[in-house]
Image (cartoon, rainbow, N blue to C red):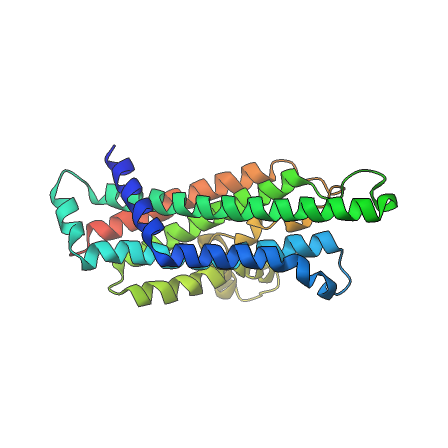
Length: 270
C-alpha cells in the first residue's frame, strides 16, 4: 500500500507537469505527420517508412520524457524537503525508490500506449487507402502485422522502464538534476551502442581489453533487443520467444539496477 501510494503520487505529479503534455503532443504530431513525409522514403515501402518514422518519434520523445521526468520527480522531493517528511514516517528508502519507479513506469506506459495506438490507426488508415488504390498488391492480405506493432510498443515500454531504473540509480548518488539528466543521456547512448562492444569482442587480441569490452557488453543492457520494427511486415514472422526474452531481460536488469539504486539511496544523506 505504501508503494502504491508513492507511485500514485508520482503519477499525479507527472501528469501535472507541462513537460509530459508537451512531449506527448510532439510525439503524436510527429507520428501523425509521418504520412506526409512518405515521398522521402528513399525507396523503402511506404507503410514501412510510416512505421519506422512513427516508432522513431516514440523512442526519441519517450526517452526524453523518461529521463527528464524521473530526474525531476526524484529531485523535487529532495529540493522541497518532502522526502524528509515521507521518510520520517514508516516508509523505507527502498520503498521510496520503488514507488518512484512504478510511478514513472505508469506514466511511460500511458505515453507508449497512446502513441502506439495512434501509429496503428495511421497504418490501418493508410493501408486501407492503398488496398483500394492497388488491390493487386494486397492479393495475399494485409502487409502490416498489427500484432507486431503492439508488440513493438510493448518492447519500447520495457526499454523505458530500464531507462527509468538507470536514471534512478544515477539520481540516487547524484547531487543535481542536471548532472543526472546529462549522464542518463550518455548511458542511453551506451545502451543503444552496446552491441558494438559484443561484436568487437571477437576481434580484440589483448586479453585485458577483451575482458573490459566483454564486461561493458554485459553490464549495460542491450537496447537493440527491443527494436523489432523490421518484423512489422505481415510476411515476416516474429522470432519465437522474442518478446518473452526481452521481458525477462528487462525484469532481471530492473531488479539489479533498482537494488543498487536503493542501496545507494540508503547511504545518502538528505
